[in-house]
Structure formats: structure tokens, C-alpha cells
Length: 326
Image (cartoon, rainbow, N blue to C red; front, side, top):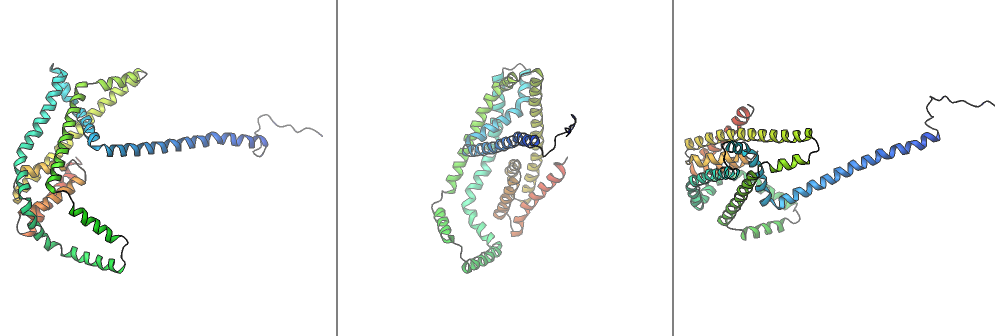
């Protein structure tokens, strides 16, 4: 019986033992690669959660230092200008930090009078706010009555204990003045930490960049690191300058609107709008609440209380639809 000749260029039958033995061997590296990718993603997710948890726990320290790094990138071009004027680097850094202190200190002095006046009026204005909100609270009371009726029909387990705990928390709460003072000291401590960290970052100059460049293996990689660092500084400076200009527009317009509506203290209201506009979504929302409460306290008749908050919303709509896209 003649032997069967298999051509040399022909492929093995997929069902042959050779193909069956080769299949699992080829599949094992692919499976191991997928497992390695999943393991990397899982470890990266755990690391991200750990970083977020640590940042939240140490927010009073982490946030000022992060702000100092951002300010370091922003004021780096200013530092270069001062260094070209043949000023020593520590003196140039000190000039920048003292300029920031003078700016915010002067603003605090200008706003201390209006802020203290509103704080002193707060105990007398609370009954007025309650009286004026009473007219607006009737729909809310109707809704609360309906919810109470539903709760009586189908009581929620643990609802009474939650109300009792809330009442105990309200009874043993911290006084408002003490909470405000605590927050003021916290903000002051964070500002001091930011200024000290900013000074040392400015004095260190390009030390971090030099160390990073030294780690890179070749000239091409070193050049890329320098270019990326310069691009980040330029883009961040332009971005923050643009945001500051838009916030200044919002602050000036809001101060003018507050003065025209009769709220008084246009510098105070303009500064509040300027600072709140740095916080997306939450800042303008807080601004609407603040201007509505100020209208309730200051303006008559009742419908006029909605005017400052409404005009504040219109200013933000105009800024978001016209100025920001440009």
C-alpha cells in the first residue's frame, strides 16, 4: 500500500493532535496578559481610592499645598521678570508673597466694616426673615402635611428615632458665632500654609524641574520634559488670567446691580460674586441664596426680594452664553 505524501507547504489539520496541543499553548499567554491588565486596573483603582481617602482626611494640609503649587506655576513668569531685573531669587519670591498679603489684607480691611455690620444685624434680621418667608412657606407646609399623612398610613421604620436624634443634635449644636470663628481661623491657617509653601517653591526655582530632567535618559526626553513644563505654565497662567477677567466682570456687574437695587455695600457684594464664580455650579448656587436672603432682609415690598437674585442669575447667564464662549 503506497505511503501518503503530505506536501511540505500544506498546513496541519486543525483537528490533528499537533494543532490540539498547540492551541492551549497559544491561549495561555493571552489569558495571562488579560489577567495582568485586570490586575493593574484593580490595583490602580484601589490606589486612586486610597489617595482620595487620604486627601479627604488631610484636606486642611493637602489643599493649601496644592494651591501653593498652582500659584507657583502662575507666578513663575512674574518671578522670571524680577530675576531679569537682577533681583536675588529669595527677594523676588518675598516681593511676590508680600504683594499677595498686601492685596488680600487691604481687601479684608475694606470689607471688614460691611461684614461686621451684617453680622451685628443678624440677630435682629432673623425674625424679619422668618416673618417674610412665612408667606412663601404655605405650599411647603401643605407638602409636609401630605407627607405626614402618608407616613401615618405607612410608617417608615426608624423615622421617630431619626427625628429624635435630629432634635438632640439641634439642641446640643454649636453656636453660630463660634462656628463662624472656627471657620475663620481654619481659613487663616490654610492661607498662612499656602503663603509659606509658595515662598519656598518660588525660592527653590527650577530645582524640581532640574531633578526631573536629570532622571531622563536622553536629550530628546529631557527636551520634552522642559517643553511640557513650559507649556503647562503658559497654559495655566493664560487660563487663570482669563477666568479672573471673567470673574471681575461678574463682580463689577453684581456690585452695580446690588447698588441699584438698594442692597448697599457694592464692594462687598461684588467681591462675594467674584470669589464664588471660581467654584463651578456650587458657587453661583450659593450666590443666588445669599442675594435672595439679602433681598429679604433689606428690600420692600416682598417681591423686590427676588430682584437681586434674579439679576444675579441673568449676569451669570450672560457671562456663560457670551463672554465664556469668546
